[in-house]
Image (spheres, rainbow, N blue to C red):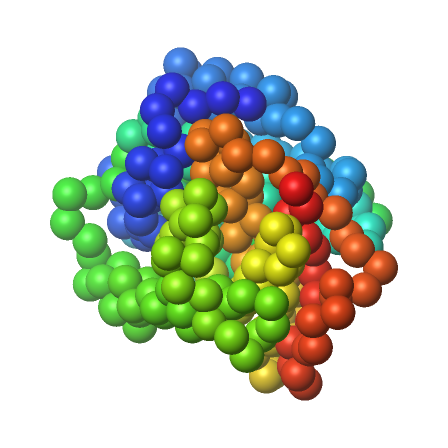
Length: 282
């Protein structure tokens, strides 16, 4: 899996788009995306995943079927499915974001959609198995120069430009001691890419603790999400996106490390609502 340009540039350039030209993705671009999907390494924890770029036949109103009128104009949609495993949603977010950034490199617009789509409809399109789950989809296409009114409202309500400060998401030795950019050292850019990661309703649920040279990723849950999105843990998907951003930036910078799920949270106390998920171990 490789990109032609720095992945940090792609992360900074990517935006969520819901307004598209009604042009289909070109055959050449389809081929490149398919080849990229086939080239993907297994995700960090080995979950069985599959991805398909399918075509949607637009009705006269040109709203993409199955998106409840949220997406307009796109003729193609990226659908991903997983087979349940202990770290399935993290693995899904990790790999799906890799594809999203490749589409960004091709000049195509995308938009993570975890709640506003019809899972049954897209399940039929990819022949979803009885033991598979679709956590998210994304339209793929040429974004319009100007957003629609609905798209602008979504972008405004998501508040995706309002990122939390570095010291509010990254810590040293414990979840009570903020990490500053100087203390982050060589991994400052990798952590900045985590800070820029997209997340459902921009909750930015990740917390990262630097301890003994390794980075430990924690999930600070938003109350009520499990009831709203039954059967799909979107905040763990968000964690997977953040993990991919961190690793991709670290690889670009030739920094060492690999993902591990430790038996315990490395002696780091977790307050209520915060849970340990994985570590980047050097």
